[in-house]
Image (cartoon, rainbow, N blue to C red; front, side, top):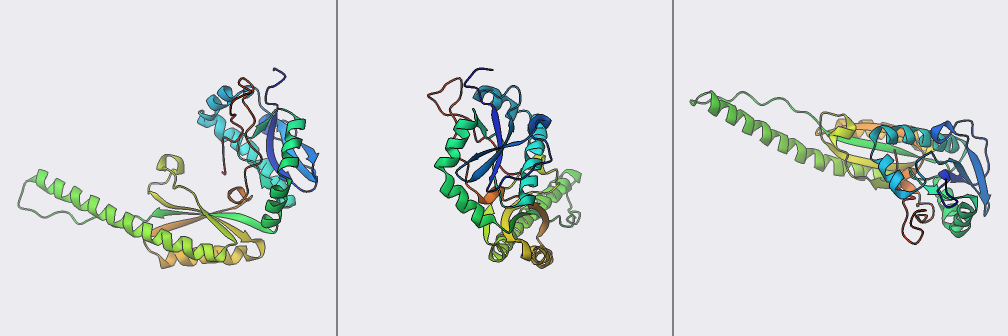
Length: 271
């Protein structure tokens, strides 16, 4: 590994140093880098991510991404259980302790403010899917079987479009209602069915920062809204560390292979 290779994988930043009982990337040990009254928790960057090209190739491997995201998240979750944390996005990498400490110094005010905002709060996700409707009645026509099939297919497509439009309207209403119950809210892009594994289309992918004391009431509100809006099926996920409500930690490190150019230090996001 060259002297300017990325060596550190950043998991998150907290105020106080706490013992971390779980392993980091590749089951490597986790340690803290301290600066500006903050603690950045890191594990060694895995073999084969010392430059942007190598990391980009890994990020195109779904199995590698799934395994690495799990290993990254378990450290962030451990930190969040101990107190407020600013989680790092997946694949936030640094060359060494000195450069990471400089980032903590440079962004100390923003990081401290973010820790204040998320203290005593947790992220909850609400995903909404188009609710399946009854199959349309078989077409009755004087034409042959081909005509009947085309009419039935046209009716199915029309019904599906109507269900989708209804679900989108319901999703907007659900998000507005949940945002009023949260300290902050964020809409992510709906995920493709190939990622969700769900048979129906996602129309809501919301994240909500909720005070811990209000978590049960928030979950109850999701259940009530699911019964109120018949066009959408809601799924509550969490609790999560506040991935959606903190700033990126610093700016991307330069690619070790091209020090004058941009890097790939922030290649991922929330789970």
